[in-house]
Amino acid sequence: MMIAPARQRGAALITAILITAIATIAAVAMASRQHLDIRRTTNVIESSQAYLFALGAEEWGKQELVDDRQGNQVDHLEEDWAKPRGPIPVEGGFIEGNIKDLQGRFNLNNLVINPPPNPQGGQQAAQQVSQLDMDRLQRLLRALGRDEELRFAILDWIDDDATPSIPGGAEDLEYLRRDLPYRTPNAKMTSVSELLLIDGVTRADYEALKDYVTVLPEYTNINVNTASAEVLAALSDDWQSGDVDQLIDERTPDGFQTVAAFLAQPVVAGNINTNEGLSVETNYFIIEAYAEFGRGRTKLYSLMVRDNNANVEVAMRAQGDY
Image 1 (cartoon, rainbow, N blue to C red):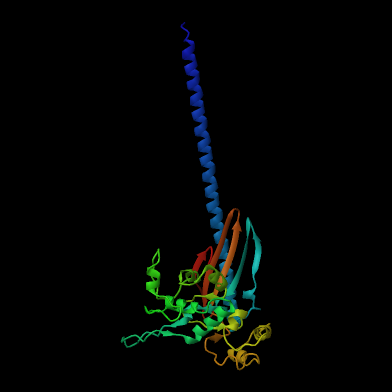
Image 2: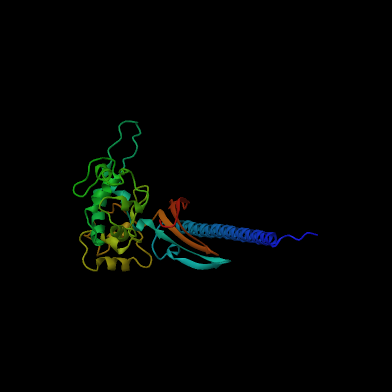
């Protein structure tokens, strides 16, 4: 029997060690990949479950709005829909949510009034600027310590002409000469975050405004029962110190039952001379839902539209920031 030389035996040993090392590395890589796939699949499942929980909170909010409209036609902040829910524990996580009245905010799309379609099919009437709402936005900007002339740039972003408003307006020419050029939409805004695209609006302006303004697809009235002190202050130039705080106290706990009752308040009489653009009921709400399940987390915003017959529909959903 022949015995392999020592050099051959050493080479065989090294080969065996290399094969073992390669097999070990491959096994570790396969195990790591499998672990990663399992974790990724788990995250997808848990995120999906959290989203389903958030949809459940949306359904709760929808039913709250249905019940509320069936019970009465007046909306105020002491009603059940206005009370936050949660956190409510569920198996594997929790849910919380709240409903906010968007008509307690100033609708930026109110600045422009589109005429109704011409039933005869002739020339469409011209778009109109709502001076009432331009004045209200001016007061709101003033109350929040922002530049009042921003209202003209916001108007130009929405209106359908190409002529800049004076002063402070901006149309396509202003935006097209930027490093990253873009055009004005000349249409209703679809998100409050569009403010960040408008000439002159800074991040600080946006942060100051975002909780007091909204953008809705039609002209909407301000609900005087749910409007904040800042939005109520925007209704008149003639408030005296403490008037708005007194007004908020007087609408508790059941709200004003009619706009006439609001206008009849001593602190209102003489300060606001029109009921135009005012209401004590709301058709547009936002449901904010947050859910966790395991590692999954979801924040869901649902824009809800309600009619006077208590029909409630989801107009839009968004995740993250609304």
